[in-house]
Amino acid sequence: MSLDSFSLFYPKQMKIPPVLKDEDASAPLPNYALLINPFYPKDPYASFGKHVLTPSLALLSIAGATPSHWKVRYWDENLLQGSPPVDPFPAVVGVTVHLTFARRAFELADWHRERGAKVVLGGLHVQSCPEECEPHADALAIGEGVQLWPEILRDIEDGRLKKRYEGSYSAPYREELLPRRDVLHRGDFLTTASLIAARGCHNRCDFCYLSTRNFHQPFQQRDIEQVVSEFASLNEPYGVFTDNNLGSKPEYLRELCRQLRPLQKIWSAAVSVDAADDPSLIREMALAGCTGVFIGFESLNCENLAAAHKKSPRPDDFARRVRLFHEAGIQVNGSFVFGFDHDDPDVFARTVDWIEKNRLECATFHILTPYPGTPLFRRLESEGRLLHRNWDLYDTSHCVFLPKRLSPDQLEEGYRWCYKRLFSHRSIWRRRPSQLADAPGYMAMSYLYKRSNRLWTFLIRHRLTHAVWRPLIQAARWRHCRFRRYFEQSQIIPEGRRSDYKRRVST
Ligand code: SF4
Image (cartoon, rainbow, N blue to C red; front, side, top):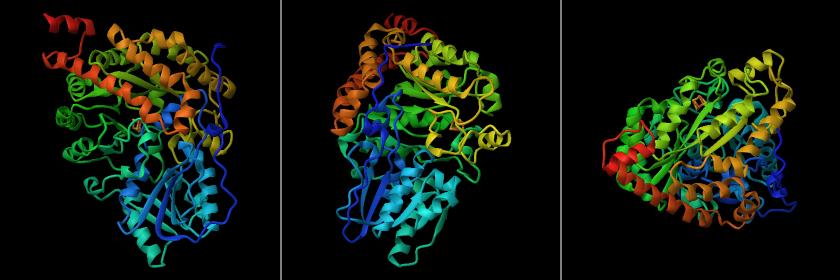
């Protein structure tokens, strides 16, 4: 396992957070709230570009729920613009806390509290480990933060802030106010059109954060008209659905596709592989502008999937399902997890061979990570297999437990080897689309995304992400519209090779 030609580039900005200046801030400005997404270290083996594809909706939704007599500002430390602004100094700071950047979130919280701001912490780590977060906050928002936020601000105005606020997910999803994208800088992301149609998941896999103890997020859908009109109102040709699984309810997805179709925009979404149960649904997705799906295959071993309680078609049917998406002109980005109990040292080469054989345009890899509060965490803890509780390393690129058939070093080395091979010239070339006309767009996207970490650092710092992606997105949209015209001319449902399909529509 060696790929020596891969040179690793890991600049300081991607490794360590910006310095918090040791200076006195001015007095907090009343009715001014600053929302912060803390810095997290980037994996130098993966693409730096993946962190600036779309903004996370969580804090934008909090911004949307901020009462109009409050000024609100959003600051994402991962956009390489330095530490959060201090002039004016905010009266209230909201910080999102996730496991891997909890340390940085606490540092930011303590720093702002020392200078007179009220700090509110929310996010998944607050849900799973509230005791750990409490010493760093004036208030914790546990659960659905968007509903809690206006109440928290009101209590701050009235001087009766409580230590804890607990939100349920009981209010109808359609009543939630729209996220505020005007707090973003247009140049920072490939697209600012992050969208969401439904939240929650009908599955409950042992390793997923959605299985965290006490986290009861029911499956909720927004009204389709609401989702479509939001996308239509955004001046973006490309949108990304951030749902855990847009295919959870196939009939909902089908109707959503029918209503998205007239927009003539392109989009991508995460769906489970069973979305391919019905090829006519894939056709609807393609006609509606879907150009890419992100699929959590997790493992090519059915014993691993069964042990994780992942409801999934059998892995020996995955290749046929990938083909169905390709026939509809939809690219497939697969997600794979390593370190399950049935994974042995061959798993890495086997997985990448499969990815290349089936020409997945992209893939992401993860080391199995037991998030606190999940069934996986409890099991590994009871078996004495947790190596430590240094949350900084619970980032899916480090091994934090004792695997069964691999050593921790083998697991980390295998994970890195997979990225090196996937990003190699040879692998990019082997996975090119079978239609020659689609190859240049694929190659341009692949090289920009996978082999340009030096460039990404520059683009992100100078807020050029959007400008650089835009021509590629326009070209993808143009290619898609051309392909869609073929599709519309016939009732053909993906089932054979795309060349067969083209032959049939042209006769
Ligand atoms: S299917 Fe995906 S989102 Fe749903 S519980 Fe499993 S891992 Fe989580």
